[in-house]
Length: 290
Image (cartoon, rainbow, N blue to C red; front, side, top):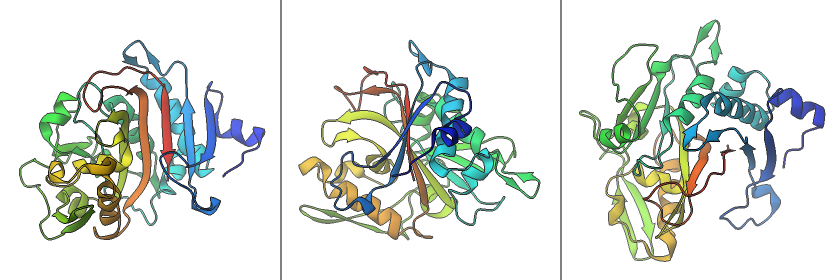
């Protein structure tokens, strides 16, 4: 668990009225020995939302303060660079969003705030290009219905955004994933965005419950990264299927372990009728974990 002095805390977060708490990761897992815990940044701001609207300038303050607190680096660009080992100005970063429920997706405004931080990364006077970022999910239609604009061009100042069903993308049948289930193993294939088109991955989930798994966060977000997730068994809250899917993505997709940070859009949430349905809670939070 990281400990920040009061002076260091305010140096990192600036003058914004933000509450940030650093804790070991214990939610939804059994920790055996404290060395297995990860640092988590939980960031709250009372003005992050107003009614059903997102206050993007406030969320930007939260996002910037969170990555600084997580890394202990006060320079925004350098804080983000420290997340991605050996990153260069030509690297490609994927942002996996969750858009299966257009009433409660990973919000575009939320992702904009991540992008605004990434483009502060400076490589000898050259800043990271927006076009080196790919926002993605299963389908173009789900992205569009959630407020994203599909773009596959090469304008350096425009983020790319498309689904696995985009022409020329699809799933990678050269990279089989062996998913362990209670009833045997299943073979699934990752999106080519994940296995062939990006160098690093940011997993950006949304806060909602789920009838089969109880909760949909960053682990289940990868059911949108493989083909036919609905064909996997769903007994025992999708365990071991979800852990196995994430282990395979970590260890089989090359280069291994490209997923470098997990972020949860908890500005709004659904705690009773997910994964579909409208928001029914308003935590006004961001959660980070490396």
